[in-house]
Image (cartoon, rainbow, N blue to C red):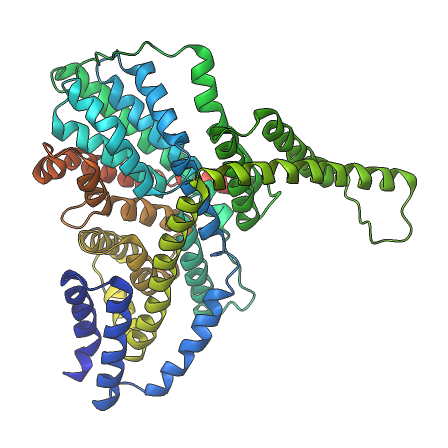
Length: 516
């Protein structure tokens, strides 16, 4: 019995989660029970648990993961200030008169919100409350409408910046370094979040294209499922379209451009995104637009000029040009700070910031509690011999490296029916990624395949999170069965997307190779 304790431990974890216990407590509780059980049965050295403190310290001092709360705050501010709602309304009126036009607008808005917020729950709930009733009033089949809303909302997991890619980058970088150590390489290379962001852009846009092609094709062969909208409001003029689309696009360019251009680390770029979202929310809450736009221009100019002509004011040998530039930079910083304070005042007055910070705290606490508990779980699992078992299973899989990868992808896909992406990322991937990398699989390509697979976990019944989010936001006439049926074709499209990246690795490896 003791030699199979690692497998029993994994089964116990699945059972605890399915019983409905809070995830982080389930993971930590199962780990503690099986640590003492393994010690009592002589299958584990209990002193291994002494490494828990080091793992906790490693997590809270991890510079990469600091980006998560900042990106979550950026998305929460955009959602609570109703910027996402305005974008959805404008795009719906722009494409609504086409057959399947509302579906197209939902997918395009989902892609834009994914690249500017990266939060699946906020996007699905916003579109479920705004777009879904409009689609149903226009005569859309409830299954089709539900499937489009659910799927478009999950784009926040694959299109950067996303919390999934940040966690995945950290896990895959550690796995890559571990694989290099096991291969006898002690001058190891690390992988960055920027590389994974770059790698996910083309596959993410490819998925958007697959969704749009499917909607257009279905609209042609079954127009009754997605009739043109009979909107009471007129089509938006050019000014409305520009005012709705340009601010999120500028925010995307500022955040991703800073990371991919090597100007800022993901954490620094996340802070840029949070400040940009705050300034955009300031305009929405009635702050003078001239103050906000002037401050934004000053901050952008400060970032560009300080990069081109840096000044170190603490030095004693500065010339007149450097002193003049330093004074100008201070002036730009004051103008930017004034705009930030004005935006803060507006968002605090309307309590927009209160709601955004509360949402950020809840989601960040959930993610980090799960990662902490998973660190404890993986320690016990390794102590019970689970790591060697996984390596043995993959090493003896028929079909060699490709057979092992196919097994792992199928295993992760099935786990997605029951577990959240955070749990799979921090419990399962550290066990399967090092053996797969040792077998010769490119870690960047492997990471993107897993990211699309984990994105699918949001859509797979019975525990797909997007399904739960939409169930809470959808009108009562939309049944749970209709939501499940609606996502089925899109799960098929996800599998097509995984297959394309599998067969054409350049889709994931070309852009990071060109930039980095």
